Image: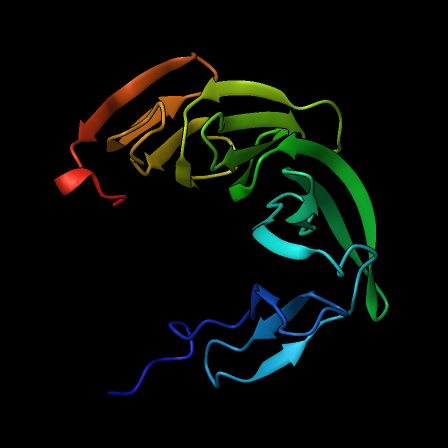
Length: 193
């Protein structure tokens, strides 16, 4: 089968990876979707921290990255390409490990996977994060587009926590209500699934 040029992706996918060495620990690479070629991108000030999550700001193309800041904290930073490296701008620090990031309208949403986790909301340009939805063990989040505050959430049930059962739902962060769900399902034999 031959793909027409209009069907072939042209922009590289940016991927955040953790290196087995400690310096730098976080690395951004560009992966060509057609050839599979991997190109290392420049470093950034906090690249010595373990990477957690990445989102692309659809408005200006900046990268929004979550990093493990230690002491059960995640640092969220904005990376702007400058010559052969990135300029790093702080966005926020949130409690717990960030599992996913999304940029919607003028906000960054951070899904925190912890017994006291949930979705934190902060201005795209930085500021104080606010807990927008308390939801323990939040492990996945998907936003549909740059102006859609309705976000799909999924959490993992863990025995011995406030959220022993897994589930999914679609939450409207502007209205502050569930559009679909939340739908939970029991974990077999009390296992984390």
